[in-house]
Length: 134
Image (cartoon, rainbow, N blue to C red; front, side, top):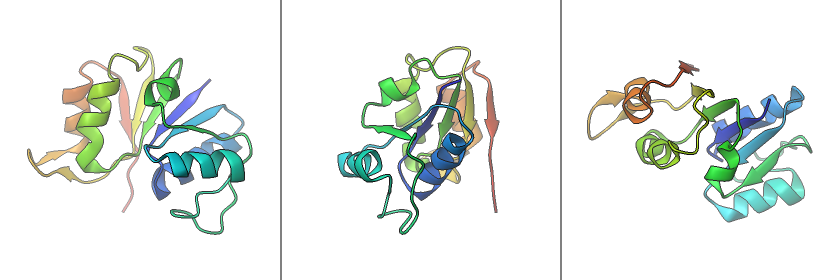
């Protein structure tokens, strides 16, 4: 099953690397072309995970639509201030049967809405789970 991970920061990259090590095809979307080039060519993301070699099978792209296309799982690890705009833009491209894993943390400052509420508002009726931490 294809897995898409949205967000090329430390959290998104670490999640994508871990999932790819499990043997499933994983495509990481990052908005920064330099991050995508480094992941693709050097299997690293030194800006966010210095010294950590990423698994060779991890794919990366700047095309968010291509990342989520045909995915059974979509992991959202974008910063909280970008969740609504990223998911809103991708809503038509995310497969209806995909499970969304929200790993973004925080509160949307303008609305004071938790990330789970932003996901519900942006992708109404979609199945989603929350991956949280401290």
